[in-house]
Every structure is written in structure tokens, then in C-alpha cells.
Image (cartoon, rainbow, N blue to C red; front, top):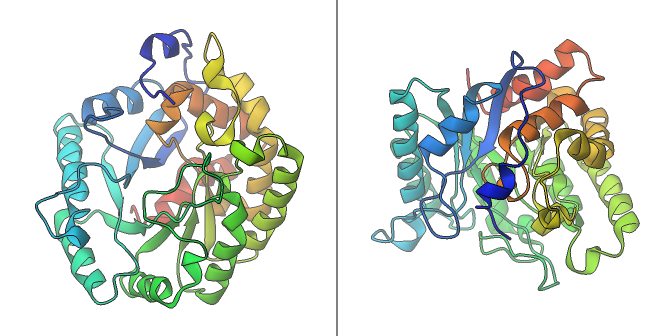
Length: 333
């Protein structure tokens, strides 16, 4: 996978279909070197370059940990890094970074409180949730999540105890997992109805490794499992991640020219509209997942594709999809 193919991406230029629709981008990252760099200046170019982005939410990605701290406290360094980028954005009078979803190991027990206190103090009032990635698969061709996941992790007493701590602090739980694990998150949401559960990236219908050649079965399993998640009113879904060729296997990374928004919408519209109709627009939020979705898509193409896919919904329903649900779930008011 390559997230830095700028000359290739530059071949696809689009103007915003609707430059006036308010957008709250509830899922983006920052990186400082390594396999990619994405800092405040890059982010500002995107969120002010085409569409009407008014606020954003930073989500952890295991970048810029403070290795001088004890191991369980090191993720607080990423929150400090995100705040440093937020300060640059504020100084430029750009759309504010209004929320932070940080990482804390939910199996820590009593030490979890210390980590959450530090995240809260460091976040300048922006802490809104915790993402503990649990994505794991038996195939070595499927990347393992960076949260040291194990099979059936979300059902353990230690993990559930950590989630109860989030409830006490009015923090959401961002669930990043793969579609064979969706029934686990449905069970979790049913067992903890007071917890706000945010299912990331469409519930990750895998299209790589052993799933590449059984796409019909993947979609059938995904739909059935997502229906179980929709039955839990405390669960919402982030509709995005649609540029991640390395997980979903669209084949776009191998094209001579990046796909345009019409092609993206044609590929994803059935899955996206299934989610919107099953959950309801007030439990769905479009997300950029940038710069990870930069593997195949520019920022304007992403939001244009969402605007195409949302075209059949009412103005009020689109308000939920593009800004309202994210604002409510992450308490951005």
C-alpha cells in the first residue's frame, strides 16, 4: 500500500458538487513521518479546499507516542501531538479540531483511570471517546489491528470493565474491527445499552486474503451481522473507509488514473445505502478516514462520492449524515 502517490492522485481533480452543505468530518488522523506524513498544513489544504467542512474529530492511530512515559501512558503522547496540530489549525482560523478519540488499553484495570485522566488533561477539553482496535483475523493476509487484539476480546471481563469506565466518563467507544466480528460488537452493545458504540468504516467488509474470492458470501454475512448491530439503539456507524484498497480490495490502487466520484459512488452505493436505511440517517455519519483513504482517493472525490450517494435522501436526513449525527455522538456542541 502507498499513501503518498501525489502525482497519481493529482490526475483526478474535482470541484465540490455541493460546496455549501455543512460537513463535520468525524474521523481523520495525523502522522509525522514513517510510512506517511499528514500534518496540520496538509489537513488545512483538504478541509478548506473544496467542501464546507466546519469541524473535525481526530481519531487515534498509534502515531507519536511518548516513549519516555511508562508503556500504558505512552498513547497520551499522541493526544499531545494532535493538540499541537489543532493549535496550528486554530492559528490559521481553520475549521476547528473539536473532538479527540484517543487510545487507552481498555484491559488495564485500575490503571485505565490514570490514562484517561492524562488524555483529558492533555486534550484541552477535546476528549470525546476511546478507540481500542480489536480487528483480528486468522488469515495472515489481513492486517492485525494495532491495539494488540485477541479473538473474542470484546467479550472478556477486563474489556467490559474498561467500557464501564468509559460510560462513567461519558466517553464513546469507537470499535474498529472486521466484518466477521460484527456479532461480537452487537452483543457488546446489547449488554451495555448505556454505552455509545461507534462502528468504524462500514463494519469493514473484507475483500482481501481468503475473502477476495468469496465476495458474495462476504456481503451476505456482512448484511446479516450489520442487521444485528442495528437492533441496538446505542450503536451508530461511520460510513467511510471507502478508499482502503488494502483491506476492501476494490482494485483502484492499480488503475492508471484514480477513480472519480461517480465510479466510487457506483461501487459503494449499495453498501452505503444499506447502512443508512438499516440504521437510519440519525445513526450514520460520513467520514473521510484521511489520510488513510488517500491510498486511492482525493479528499474532494471522497465527499463528492458521499454527496452522490446521499442525493436521494431528504435535506434533513442529509443534515444528519454530513454533520448532525457526528455532532450529537461526539458532543461537539
